[in-house]
Length: 336
Image (tube, rainbow, N blue to C red; front, side, top):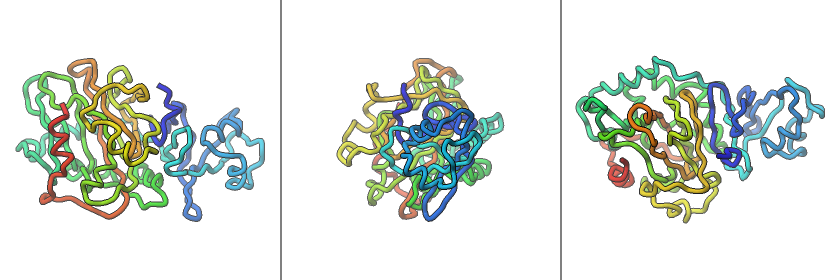
């Protein structure tokens, strides 16, 4: 499970976590001449060599960006690191956002409130053309396991999407103009995975997110998928798996590299994570990923996570008259 190999995947835990699993002292973003930089504070006993290697940055480029910085650098010094979207680097991009606070009881309660809204109580099959997924809890009560466009029914979740710490992630798509797709694609989705006899959502097979554009009649555009994890999920408990580097694959492998949603098999290239409640993840829409089924049962297997896409290109909002995309008609039959 060497996450150094992970490209364009970001894991944030309370503070900013790098792909190395160590804190990154990032102070935010700086934009200059249509370029975006991480504002980085040098740590104690941190040599310039390790920083350059960490960010896949040459000494020449570093000097060009930081002409006033003397070498050797000093602890506490502020330097600028360029962000290269879709970089071929061997390290992950580091999300230059301020710490994401831990998920607290109030946020968990908000999810319970959403489960009681009319569309859930009435067991509506779709919201804006996107199917909902229902299951039953251990007491036999109907529960929602996949709810799309959830922020449209919750003021706190709507405010969450407006948070500047999330909005800052749009910079990863530079030079494209990124936006949080609150009412596009599936909006803010709440997934509730649990391994029980009456569950309809225990895993999700290998897939990428980008080809959905093709079903919408447009070319594939750069996009990110942002996950806000509500439950702690250790690597051994299943959960998120990705195949590093697949965001650089050609169109053929993007479309036919695996059997979309049908293939749930382990892949020797895949990596997983020890995720804590409150972590935030970001992955490129072209990255092959899946949700591995937990080996546990009941509450020990529960994994709740919210996902919202950051998209580019033509604005395409959905409403109650929107048709169900083809891929959703298919995935509804293979998720279990």
